[in-house]
Image (tube, rainbow, N blue to C red):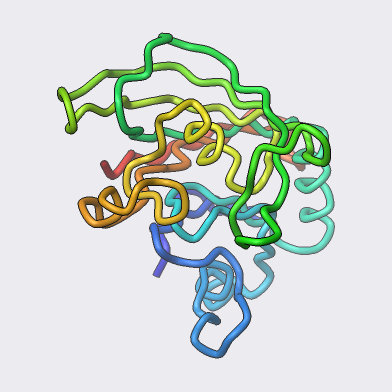
Amino acid sequence: MPTIHHLDDDLLVVDKPAGLLSVPARGADRQDCLATRVQALHPDALIVHRLDAATSGLVLFARGLEMLRRLSRAFEQRMVGKAYVALAHGHLAPDEGEIDLPLAEDAAHRPRQIIDPVHGRRALTRYRVLARLGEGAEACTRLALKPVTGRAHQLRVHLLTLGHPILGDPLYAPADSTARFARLHLHASRIAFIHPRTRVPVQFESPVPF
């Protein structure tokens, strides 16, 4: 069963493990997902946003349609703060910065995304180096990531574009990375928002598992 960080009459904050879908996908073998598991415990729970199956971390659920509307509106208005931690290949030189590159679907290689200055939608990521680890082929950088926008695969493609793919990324890292690392090293570690009923700021954190 999923780890529930917070539960009240209006919402839940739940930890999704790496490798589990957020919602069902096509195929009888892809029906197990976080939403189904949470709804088995709380039938009125409705997922507000998603994480890639390979990504672990915090996911917000609303209890009922009215709370779903309120929380979805907060996401649309960028009033929900999300923070991630990642381990990326190599040593990223700047201590912090922004990546402002538009993303679009790679129609020939779905579900991959690509940088597309013509047809892409704006995607903005802020990053900060937490630590530079290892040397040579073992070098990697621990990063705090803040997606200002919420495009599919945004953090993964933006770091790839800098030449620093995330460890174990099955879509964007070199093949030897996925052979060496059992999972994508990307975790949704913090979520913050105004509670839709009490109007009090709340923040929830999840320990990084790598």
